[in-house]
Length: 419
Image: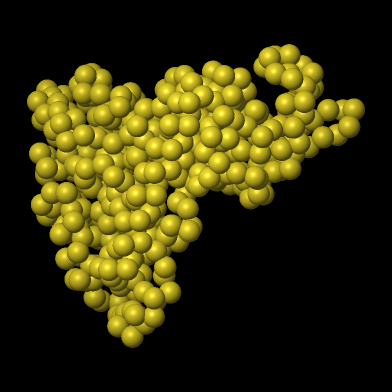
């Protein structure tokens, strides 16, 4: 509630006994949670005056992004970040030494994408794409894509739940969100057909390891969604923007609506989850006319993504040791998801299959679950910022960071889910 803005800085919190009675938990549980929240700088105790919400340390962030940014202070187990395990990223040192002598840094006039990287990207693209360029990460790609195809007041179909910064970006561009619920195979075709009657300009999708649910589109579902769009009387020309942010560490099949709608898909492939967030590099491909406009606009800003970084990425994507390290990471994340899911099942909590690093845990009460877990030294992401429309109670758990004590952590998550 603090990170979502429901509780403002300076708000007085209920007493330990009041909240314990309201939540149906022991005063000791609330007291431990209050200590945990105080320890991470979210609340402050003022003796007999009570406990109060502190000002957000990074209030300059976009509203929903604040809820994702987490806290700078450490906790026993932070499962709120949605970031990869640093131990599972490929080593950069060897790549840096290999590219030191061949990375070009002296030209303003070269092509924005180095040819050898474009060749590798095209060979792994899920469909035959007209044009590809490289930008500074998935969010930069999303921002550039929206800037190119969306205008103020346009309606845009979004996944519900979805990625909060996408919602912040749409708000920035003055777009109107049209939420579509998901099932285990991704966006529901019947609800998409209904949403298309609103005449949206664009449709935002995460084809694999959807954030926050961890769900992935099946080939059959992707084909059905493409058919729904193609046959729509209201939005058959809507542009599909796909954010494949976790592709290299996802075990699900690489699918894209571009296989059926190549002229109206912008497909984004990020390497942050697989190769390192600080590389800040992603590729975006689509119709030549749109990619050319996007590249032309970037020339008036950053110009291009560092060709040195592109050379490093090319090395990581082609070096056998780096490829093996990413393959190992994919298997380990899959194992961690499976082991946590099985442990939760042992405590009476059933999870839909999750790919990538995140999973979406339904809880009886979001606030109670977060308080209970905070008292146990576990931080998770509140579900509210991910909801495009009013829904149930959920928290996002970065299961990919759980490397041991699966049963103990599952027991704490299960207990919190019922709080």
